[in-house]
Image (cartoon, rainbow, N blue to C red; front, side):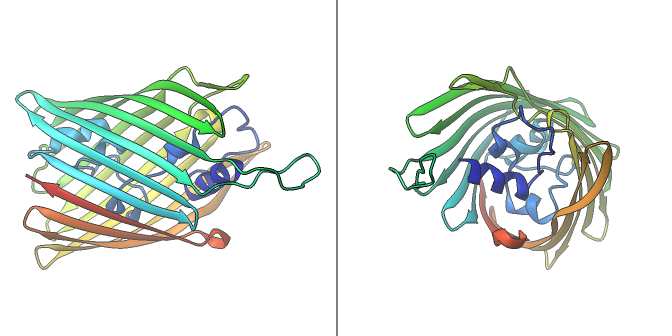
Length: 305
């Protein structure tokens, strides 16, 4: 499990030397190829079923029933899957999502390093969210989560809460202009695994997006994780052309505390991807280099009905 957690932290927001009480790193993994291609700058510009994972308030922008699925190949034996559904109602939008991280059987080792029997590890989360436009330009939303992690025969579970807001200065999902988003994710009592209790990755995010008339969207996100003493900045851009196609690019950096010095380090670096829509169906792809860990590829499918 340590190998998986190390991988996930490197792909998203690496923990600092002080981050000894934070766990459930799979909750940091971004979902949706569109968002990942834009460097994770999605707090303000989210407008689909995947918004449940970025900013629950953005679910208020969903106008039709929507189903989305994402598959990410983290390494040859570690996979991340996410499925979401959003359903508009008279007074808001109700949504649900499932997250599952799995990996191949892990070879166990004794204290001398000799091979022992293998074991498996997995992480799951079920999320239920609701969002509503409390004002024409303002959406508010919240999620409740059930989280479960298992290693070999041991398992642990807990609950958590997300809250978010999204404000469009030009009107919710208007033709253009700035949009502001803010969210608090993974508020909860932590999770007790065996005899140790660790905190969930509490995340505070603030984002701004700007939709230009020429089908160009620019986005900027800042995320802070108090328990691991680190922060993340994401920059993203999306350009639409030929009505049904889009090109995307992004960049992610991390500001982490190392002792008494703050250092700025490139983690994910550049990301890129594209999307295509055919009537009410869409497909998105993103590519993120991950250094010695290889390249991370994400494929997302969506349908509106």
